[in-house]
Length: 478
Ligand code: HEC
Ligand code: HEC
Ligand code: HEC
Ligand code: HEC
Ligand code: HEC
Ligand code: HEC
Ligand code: HEC
Ligand code: HEC
Image 1 (tube, rainbow, N blue to C red):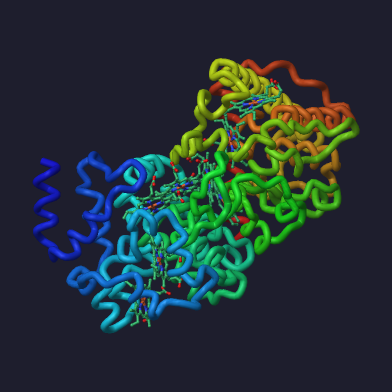
Image 2 (image 1 turned 30 degrees about the vertical axis):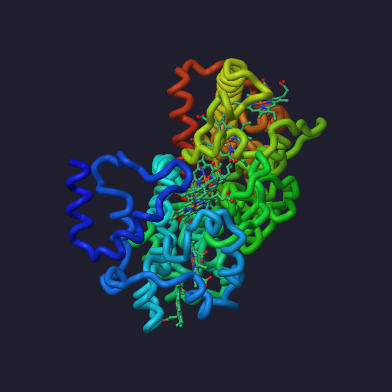
């Protein structure tokens, strides 16, 4: 069945292009043979080409280089490409860009595979089938549509200023952050166009070329010291670019493969900022790098507890989330945690810290509710104003909310938004919850009794706060 489908697809397209695409396979793991009846991966690639290009034949990389030199930050493309593993394995310009004869005769952007479709992971999947399959299971292959749609409605806020689309569109990351164009000076029309292309053409949070340069050996080595054409480092303990108060132009370009997106957007825990920024939490859902490195939460009177062991693991995030280069980005307790823990030890520790942190989060939340009930007669009024408004209430004046509550709610959101419930940096997560308790003690709010909810019930409770805050974030920015 699969074979017949493949043959009939091939029969319907010009022979030259078909041979060109198929002969070139042989990347890591070889081509995919079973992809759920979607047709062959190479047919997927050919479907990206325009009809004019499908009828074209092959030219040499040297012919491409005659015209392409001195353009953009990644130039000269040809010279860089000659330094790559791709070059040594015979992966040519046309392996990715498709046949070039028509383009050579009359260069346009429609007779060569160019932006936006060239960034589609299907281009790489021709040869990196197993990796592409793994990637397709990950959140990175999906799109959170809200921030991208909002950029169409309001390009100034979601495009130029907050730059949501720099982390929420693989296409924007390739064209602007990596392509050397400034999102801050893009016009409304340019932002609308690339947001629409993201939704209609390449709808992913991150593409292969968000993390990998297509043309260049970069010297940003993997945790095992190997070249992988990574645009940014996998290990970086210099957190200057994501420090409190940094602007979107800086923190969206942080030199870290994962934390270029997985950072808390310059979150600032100072009392001054907690007093002026009362509409919503000042860290984004993606504050994992801050959590790993142990900064960005409100500190208390005791010594700050930071776990440097996980922060110093070779490869940092990739050590645990990409063992054996696995592109699902999910953690594996065996290879991901060795040699430091056995799989059983890692699993036991993860279960125990998650349950401890979850219980303490619920306790802090219960205490903040008790305070709000006593002070305002409404147990939601410990919250940020947009989260109160989202429930249909009028928020009380924030001058009536003491700094102790403002500190506690910052740390509460800081821990839940990182999404790991203490695993990334157990000492820091526990310390931030101590600071919550220290501040609530100052207000003489009684310690809460252990919750009678089931583990799932506790998780649901915490996640309802997360969901509400996300929704409020989106409407508050309009
Ligand atoms: C025509 C087949 C082909 C295509 C298309 C292709 N690759 Fe490769 N790729 C290879 C081969 C072959 C290797 C070398 C594998 C080896 O030696 O283990 C390779 C190696 C790599 C490496 C490792 C580099 C190194 O220095 O070790 C990366 C990263 C990579 N490819 C990424 C990509 C990305 C991203 C794309 C799409 C933009 C892509 N490849 C498209 C065939 C291809
Ligand atoms: C005769 C000169 C010439 C040759 C040969 C040539 N190109 Fe081009 N190429 C151009 C010109 C000129 C443009 C700009 C076309 C336009 O903007 O309409 C272009 C545009 C492109 C683009 C789109 C650029 C962008 O900014 O998005 C890509 C990709 C591209 N070429 C790749 C290639 C590849 C790969 C080859 C070899 C297979 C090749 N070109 C061969 C002249 C050439
Ligand atoms: C492994 C796949 C791959 C190979 C091989 C490859 N490209 Fe590209 N190329 C891409 C992707 C993906 C993009 C868009 C992302 C980007 O620009 O970083 C791109 C962008 C371009 C662009 C437009 C952007 C710019 O920087 O001007 C040109 C021109 C281009 N490639 C030419 C070439 C030429 C010439 C070669 C051969 C010497 C080549 N490419 C080899 C995948 C590839
Ligand atoms: C610095 C990069 C970055 C910026 C800028 C950014 N985000 Fe995010 N965002 C992320 C990452 C990464 C995640 C996933 C976090 C996770 O899974 O823990 C995320 C998650 C989200 C979610 C949660 C989706 C869900 O329900 O799981 C929403 C909604 C969202 N972002 C909207 C926005 C909006 C709106 C903006 C602009 C005002 C924005 N983001 C700016 C990186 C960013
Ligand atoms: C979110 C970032 C990210 C995305 C998206 C991504 N990669 Fe990677 N990739 C990495 C990192 C980091 C490594 C090095 C992992 C390690 O071995 O420590 C890597 C390694 C690789 C390697 C080398 C593997 C080996 O065994 O030597 C290849 C090939 C590769 N990626 C191809 C792809 C392709 C194809 C896609 C899209 C389908 C893709 N990557 C998407 C970050 C990414
Ligand atoms: C271009 C921005 C970007 C980069 C780079 C990036 N991520 Fe993500 N990541 C996101 C967004 C956005 C989401 C949320 C996607 C969703 O929920 O649909 C996400 C989700 C995740 C998730 C949640 C689980 C899932 O699959 O939904 C994990 C884990 C993750 N990323 C790990 C990593 C790691 C590890 C790296 C570095 C190798 C990395 N990310 C690099 C943007 C990025
Ligand atoms: C010490 C190993 C380790 C390191 C280092 C690490 N993580 Fe994690 N991460 C985990 C574990 C374990 C979980 C919990 C997974 C679960 O509950 O299924 C997790 C959870 C997450 C989640 C939430 C996943 C979800 O499904 O919502 C994201 C996102 C994430 N990590 C991203 C990152 C990023 C980005 C980095 C680097 C800044 C990083 N992690 C560093 C082990 C690690
Ligand atoms: C580079 C070595 C290293 C790696 C890799 C590593 N850990 Fe750790 N981990 C440590 C050290 C060291 C400690 C703190 C000292 C101790 O408790 O033994 C620790 C502590 C922890 C804690 C806190 C335990 C507590 O009760 O305070 C958890 C949970 C944990 N690790 C889980 C994991 C998981 C899950 C992975 C893999 C996904 C992992 N670790 C990967 C070295 C590592």
